[in-house]
Length: 426
Image 1 (tube, rainbow, N blue to C red):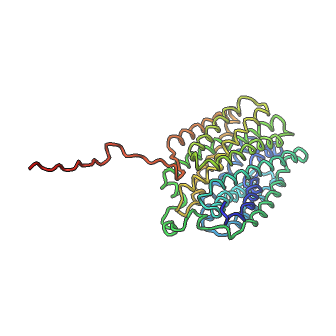
Image 2 (image 1 turned 180 degrees about the vertical axis):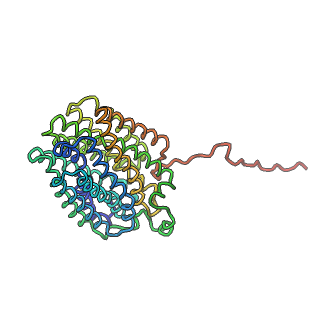
């Protein structure tokens, strides 16, 4: 981190740590709560989670555009954190399907602010050259925060029941608000935070924004397709594992889910740091290909056994796939949008596309579970991950600026050098 950004180093660490639980909302804990306390079936649970995800999808691109243009980025994070917390705290007080869906839709929309806002603040503080290492550090603290929250949720839920996760989320939100206020506002260069580098401000006015960014940038479109498939395969896996664990032991359902989350998050911490340190050396493409391959393997291994130890062990693989993805996503977008001024709206546009995959995933998986069982759902998700891997490996170019291959001209297309004229004999 540069000397300019040094005062923001610790506050950024704390922000990513405390916001981890708030950014993801109730996540898989919602599925356990609705299954064990409200007695909903898997299809209903999948539908309400999809509604929340769809609300987040609708807000992603506007949220990214807002982050690009607003200078009060810290205030935006605080406002969204408050909305997510209030929406979650209402859940123990309501049981009607549509009321639950409405509160989760609201929190899903508010949560769409966090990823682009944190990425923008980070880029605005450290600049593009130091972004890879700092994003890796961000993700490491994010996963450490998730692991800590999951440990607390597991222990407290064993004593007080699943409802405790709502109060834990509120406590983490307060910590995230304090951390946000500790980030020095003067340390953020708002032009750099948009992806500008000084001489590109005028040109950026003529660049496309929103979904036009995707439609006019082929590598960005390919990356969006790969991330859609990644999230379609990934989003439903952890909730399904949580449901299986809850059905085995309803009393320990939330605690066992916490063990799954902690196991994966502890793996994600070193993975994120490794990605931050090697993405500029090894490149983005091989790392993300590993993430997709591990995701496919994970889906194929879940049906092998219903033993809780086996399920938790397989869930550790999520630490590899999700750890790589979280650290690479903003880097690839930054690579492909450098100098346009649309870094954050591009994140939002791609997040909209990948959110579609995540939203459809929980509904599709819930329907498959009801009709054919959990094993069929896991194998279906694994197949989707394989398709994503093929698409990415075949079509996606390397985006790291210093590793992009230059395509040599074919020999026959090279200009021929004319031989020097020979003097005519006298």
